[in-house]
Figure 1 (spheres, rainbow, N blue to C red):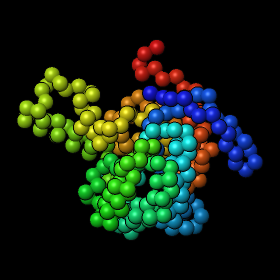
Figure 2: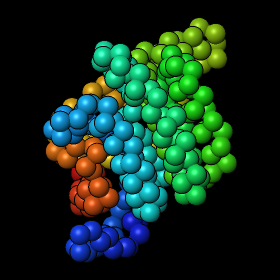
Figure 3: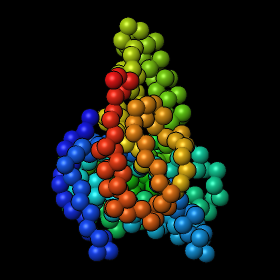
Length: 253
């Protein structure tokens, strides 16, 4: 479901762009791709790209708040990312603590509520503590819900959901007559969220990378070659503008 996009003007480099008079998605999912390549093109270590990407997160969160988006889900660390060099994995998993230490007051000021999806119990203690602290601090906020997908993989999520549902069936908490798409969705990490209306992927790749496979069944996709650290509010608004012009039929006419 979409809602009216607030009318406003955005100015960058003396260029004024007008947005509004349309629909904006309630829930946006983003695959933040291109951090490592951004750094390598500048002769910098991949770590630098991941760190630079943090400031982009804040810019896009503020843009989403401005547009009155209800939920923003960011693919932060996947179950496949453990395959990367240990030094890079360790650096990435220290970033949530650094990000929240610097930007949590700003997120609080914007009434943002932080949550996670994924198997966070397998993350390092310092990562879990930082995220839990942020969730506790923002628990009473009722603005944008910012979901960090941490140690998340959609196939893993689906298997866990099927196991949990099967257990409830065996225990008599659920009958086979009750099993439908809506009930199954209640076992997913995103049970408290509507399915994403829009998926944005930066970095030039055009694949889902094991991200929200069930939830993205009827989501509109928007791909860009822009690397995540270079992704701006203007790019974000362009994605919303293209979304506004699409006709969503959900299989109908």
